[in-house]
Image (cartoon, rainbow, N blue to C red; front, top):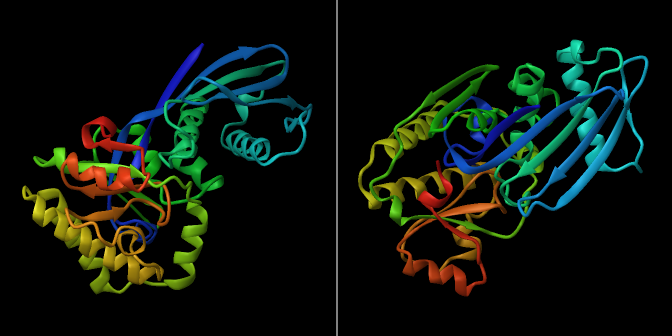
Length: 305
């Protein structure tokens, strides 16, 4: 039996613009996904996925044909199709995995809700790449696409600075451990955001970022990493929100949902419009969000590695 584990992720800065090679700050989470793999002699791939409550939510069987292609036996559905695409991409990168009379049994388990946007896809890709001994970034490119920062989070156990400029990936672990982290909270908005849709919208509006805008994001990132002052941290988060707002043509989440929150800053994380946001304030200040029926709130140390 082989076992693999990958961390979930939160993108703190440079959402969308990371696609244009701008460095981002990303945070691996304490939640992730595990994968257990056993060989079988049946020439089939058996797959089971369990959610964070340990409930089986997906099962499929894939037949390995004589021409080394796969087909599944269940009714046609998007999840089975996606997994089929991933396996076909893996076998393109490493064809030796498909030898005669050899199959595999996979059991995948999430430790977070798949609706939270913490990386159910990226943790799966990284686990499968580690099993198949293929490059996880190449596998991501062949399947879901994206910059790859989420794959880096899956691999690293500390906050990172990540960039992908013309397929040249750079990952650096950074010392991001704010002295004011007891004033940082992560709040789930209750909507699973489609990252690919957000990327397409960004791409349709921005063909090329100006040198000035790139410099602005670099300055904000450096300042966020260095600051020891919560007010300064909030200032840069707000500045970042306004920059992204102009680039994607959307109101900030504070303007849209939390106009009257006056205790700190609010910032979208990742694709705008869903998943988690970051809010600063005290534990008591979080009652504002609870009263608005946002029940899933994590302290920094509860969520971030």
